[in-house]
Length: 191
Image (cartoon, rainbow, N blue to C red; front, side):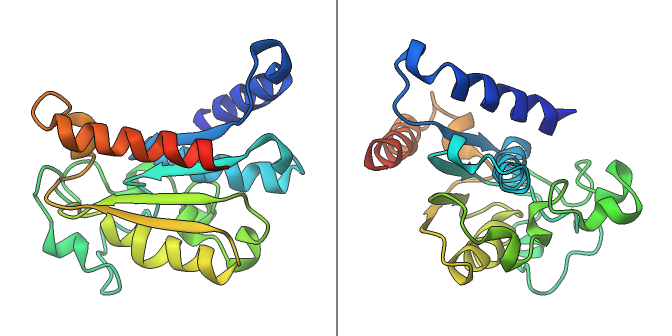
């Protein structure tokens, strides 16, 4: 339902571009919203609607569904376990959420997209947090797949922060919050 809601919102915004004076549409979200951000772009490609998206900005994307197994190619899952987010104890067990083919469906878990799924996508930013267990699925895997697919992509690491710390702790870390906000706005303006 979440992906359908995002797709509907995207279609509505695209249909209202002129009346609302919208120059650029950037799909963005953090954590589970980062998953939906990336899945919305993948679905738009599948549906032949990539013209509706000018850019994609995913913050600390929750995208692998591999939290019960903690694979070796994702060392941040063990290095950063329990820095704000515990894996798999914090409900990060993809097996609880979905079963069967959905565990590797890129629209459910974008980490599993092939390079061919990513070719032709609009410019991306993958922003991760240094102390996040999910860091490597976004930066080590998805970012690199985007590069391999020829997508214009920037990887960004917010040092010294836990999962979504740059957007969650805006009062405690105003400089970090504003830096992330400036980066998102700068990305949109540069498109």
